[in-house]
Length: 368
Image 1 (cartoon, rainbow, N blue to C red):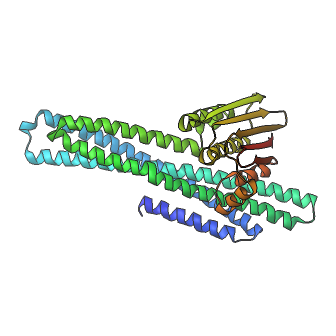
Image 2 (image 1 turned 135 degrees about the vertical axis):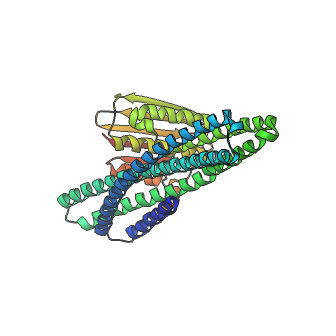
Image 3 (image 1 turned 90 degrees about the horizontal axis):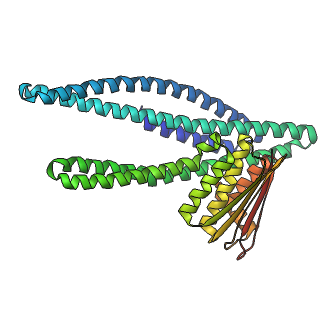
């Protein structure tokens, strides 16, 4: 089976699983989530084996390609003494080896990309299961009305899953219309350069300059997508450096003046706390960019002994909070409504204060 077809079928299976999940009872939801987590773990092991096998094949092909490249160079130095048929066979073998190496490297990259996506998905499922277990234990110990609380908690979890899948679909479309299309254009430009080398070297050099700029633009777009998905520096350096870098990039892209004030303890927080804080800041700034028509954004972050407090305030157009929250829930996207549910699931609180014409302020806190 073709790798792309396999990945496509897997994505379809994921979507079908989600549809089944949202139509199930609370107990069935958690059982199906657990089964999905186990399935993902098995698939990760299988992909790891495939990556190792494919990497070994790439290593062999790279050696074969190097040998053929050397053979071509030796042949070119003595081309007058080598039969025409031998020259053709050596060139053909070299091109086939290069193509095979290119395809295998692409396959390894696809497998590695799938592996990373599955790891993130598995981590999300694990956290959902952990939160659900905690909620079930708490409600069973504190109140006889377990069923109602369990249903409410599960409904929140389902909303988050739904929003995550919707965001993945949105990101998939962005990748298809952005970097994927750009890469297609790069291949076409490379082919043009290849054809022009013999007939018009000067124009070929000009095309190469354009190709270089296009590659750089595509690279920057991919870096931006990666940072939006999961900035690696959040795990390596922590929340404060990541927020500063994100806001610096945001200012360059939007031209909006932003000011971040950080106070309190300089310490690493639990991973899920840092991720949630970063996502609330990110979503709030995205809303300012897309809707607020603001000229300035003021932000604060205070790390105390037992809680983290933060605020994001803009001088933009403002909006009707109740109407916007209702629309966000209907769209099932990762907006401030879903962020509010995430914060509350972690024991915190998020409040939005906005009036049309008077800007918006988002305040939230999370326990450490």
